[in-house]
Length: 114
Image (cartoon, rainbow, N blue to C red):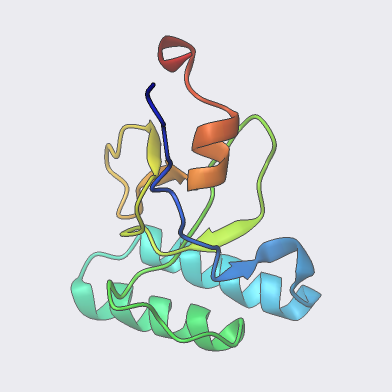
């Protein structure tokens, strides 16, 4: 008998939809600045301000990201270095990867992963 277990245990650091409106605005603005940053100093500062705005510590990776699931528009904010994430769009010219959080990767796999 085979027993399958999941290693996808990372919990969101915050939930965007539960933030106060001004926290959402600051977080979203900082994420836009980070995504379009031309240098590491600008990127890092945007991430620091985003974390402070939503009252969490910046994870060791130094980055935050909001789930990019297009199936459920998940509000999870997480560390992009967390286990179990799935890339939903090539990085292209972006500074921030477009990733699904682990629960969305499990619940809404890509068609070729079904």
